[in-house]
Amino acid sequence: MPSETSEPLGAGHTDIRRGNWVDRYLPPPARPYARLARLDRPIGTWLLLLPSWWSIALAVRPGQAPDLWLMVLFAIGAVVMRGAGCTINDILDRDFDALVERTRVRPIPSGAVSVPQAIAFLVAQCLVGLGVLVQMNGATIALGAASLVLVAAYPLMKRITWWPQAFLGLTFNWGALLGWMAVRGELAWPPVLLYAGGILWTLGYDTIYAHQDREDDVKVGVKSTALRLGPAAKRWILGFYAGATALWAVAVAAAGIHPLAYLGVGATGALLLRQAWQWRPDDPADSLAAFKAARVAGWVLLGSIILGMAGAS
Image (tube, rainbow, N blue to C red; front, side, top):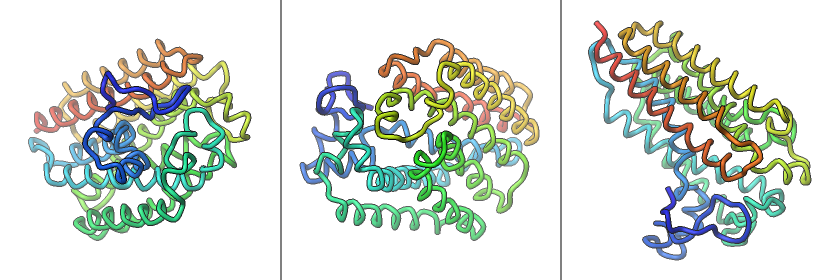
């Protein structure tokens, strides 16, 4: 996370900061690549990682704790694959990004990283991700490889549909299927329900995030749920979050979790609904803060699953 003393990089609203750990600790040639992979803004990595951790925790046998080494492997994979996804996005969107206030200072549109350099960096990240994936069983490797189709296609969705946030949900929550597969070697209803709930969760938080760019998106001609839902967006997001909570409750029930864990699932839903209710759609800074707050609910759900499975019999 940016330090409290860091400042925006360039004028206007942007989530890219200067004076944070990237500037303090990395050599100058590495800094644009760290920003290209969003290493200075880890919120996206957490939102990608948490569904896989939920699933790993839910897949253990009752009374057991999740495999910490497996969770570490998924954490490494989340960092590099989130970075790879951001790199693909920035390569494809470089012309759009140059016209949008929040994104025009990104490494590619600002000229800090060329397209050939970004492609080489993308290949390196994918190779690291492959190295992580081959540590898993064969079924997980196949399922993980299938996700690359979603990763590559997502940046194009804002050009063809008003619902690119739904496609991001399909992509970002794939770990809910992978985590269970890595533990059990097969799929079942609990991870599928986790995945479905995660898609609605992502629809909520990424619609909030998209409100930062509404005016610029209209100017450059790209689509989003923020534009599609308009003034009704808050009501829709409350519905998305309520639906996500219901699906997660059914998922943990199907896994035979301890009943006390339902309190944690309920707390997760209450927290999300509170975040959406208090969100101010016309304030870009508040949209960014509400987007980041989704991670807290994800952590509450993870803790509920771990404690619930440890107490199950």
